[in-house]
Length: 492
Image 1 (spheres, rainbow, N blue to C red):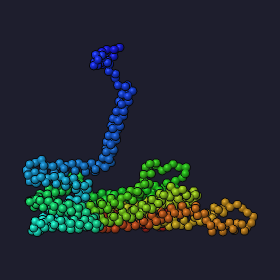
Image 2 (cartoon, rainbow, N blue to C red):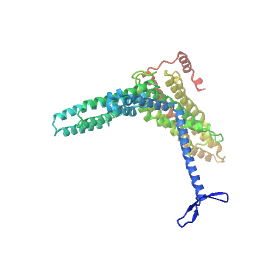
Image 3 (cartoon, rainbow, N blue to C red):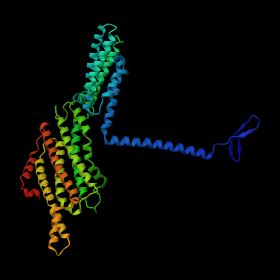
Image 4 (cartoon, rainbow, N blue to C red):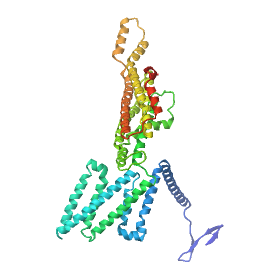
């Protein structure tokens, strides 16, 4: 090492006695490599930070998911004591891992789903274990040569029958997981019994550990911040009713919006207009929640044998309304639009019907929220009938309106025959391309109104089956006063 011009220099001895200086790495290459490492490190840090931000936003938006994670961790910590504590480990033997596997497999986010899987797993394991022990006893009585043949025949028959049962709709809806566990357990017990001597003790230990794991799952799921599938289904239907009302209001407000005015309330209005998509996409969620809700005991406001199937009928009727709103939404983005003078003619009648229809949906949402029988539905339905009649009358007046406009814009001619021919031509050949978009929209509104009445009847049936509380006397009196008003007052 030597000092050269104030800089530190490294030298090495060569075989011929000379010394050579060590040249440092290329400056640009080294800087490029350092910069590349900084970029890679910075990108990695940014990806980790974005992931943490996304996880935090999910946790804030849906705290139930955080609660579910904590509950699973608590259940696994408790069931791990079977390994950590020697007296418990000696009691269940090496099969303690089956309890851990049970917790991981059967613990779901809702009480109904957890109960469904626990009961299916326990029942399937018990039946398959008992049947497997019996099959092994029969095979042992057949002799050493026929024993594997008998075991293979029984495995083939029961596995085929259980697999086929999973295609039966009623079995698949409620007992699909139990059938799969039956196949797995029966095959394990039957096959392992050919080599294992203490088969009964082994089956008893496995059933015991599975029962312990399932009991811990049920206990924690029901007692620590329980999330009920029935309540989630009830809230889902309630929210979807509000989304349908907001979508209907938003679509019609956008359709009749003046060209000079700005878009209604920006992104929030756009999200509300797309709320009907949540209704269209919620069929699978509703079916699974209704299935799990039937496994749950009475809880909160929901009694035993609550009519969960009726919620599926309500959801189906709501989806029929959502299809109408989806078509209405496509009318907004259509390239063919009605002229402004026709829109102004139809605006009042269409907006009246839209307002009453959305009011019915909102009233039905309040009915589910309070679990009281609706107090204003009869009044709103009568108002909607008046609005339907008003819209139909307005539709009938469109040809007269077009004829009047055409006559006023027709150039004056001296010949009386020319005027008569023009009138006949206008009456017989109306401007179809101008009328068609508006009549399509009005027809969809009328169809949607009839479907909303179907939703109201389904929820009324639900209120009867679930024994909703009657409406308060004050609301009943107000409803009677409103329904007894004269027709002219209602139309005003």
